Image (tube, rainbow, N blue to C red; front, side, top):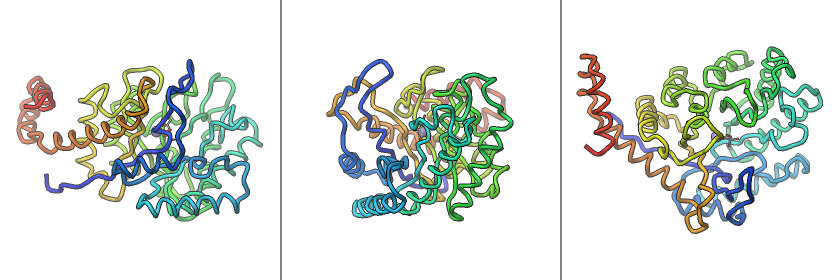
Length: 346
Ligand code: XUL
Ligand code: MN
């Protein structure tokens, strides 16, 4: 390996979650933002990712001036701790106005709200000195196919993206696709869709993507191939590593927890594309298990980073020339076993 790059890591306040699920209440007490930030620093992570209202709580109820002031106060707190804000994402799935979609709602007043909220999210990002906005298009899709016009919805999405690009000439947008949950069927389910959408934007150079391992798996894809695909276009600007055990609810398991080989191949793809060399971060969008005790609250983050770094070692010590010979000989049985032996420690 010619370059031995170091990676930079981050997570969001929502990744120290309290354990509630649709069937039961929290299993751990709520913690303050300051506690979470202190934890992030103690664990030696480099950056924090934010939703707009993680940065400025209850932002819809506040004036523009107040939002900017609180964002600046947060910036100072981050600076004091030597932590940067990696991304800011508009949370467009909680408000009653986003019940039937945000940018693609059938109601023009709701679409207007979604765009205005996104512009405020950009103001928050600017105050945090962050130029990357993440769009997880949570409710852009349908529960009932006939309820929306999907052709029209593509135009709505482009309109919203263009409004954001015009609001600030410096910001970039990374679309985070997910095929389902909360929607039955999402309009932007894969990286191919995200990148195709970017070509319709007013300034396609400023629209890229974020890959989340679990979301790719939910789309029936291999996240490593999604990484290579996005990197072929120079569009992988952020990353949510985690794991997912098959096609069910979005699990956000620790990285490598369900399928170590799929995790290995993601790391190999990141290595060959030199992910991180242009300042990109590795984020873990992972959650503690519901059963996790308070004293083990951040272990899923520490474990994900540890697994990632162990797999970087594995990728760097993989016998590439032996693998190439097996490929040339079309001896994929031996190649398959060689990968397993390598992962098992030989
Ligand atoms: C949802 C998800 C979100 C985004 C940020 O599945 O991954 O946490 O990463 O809005
Ligand atoms: Mn995510």
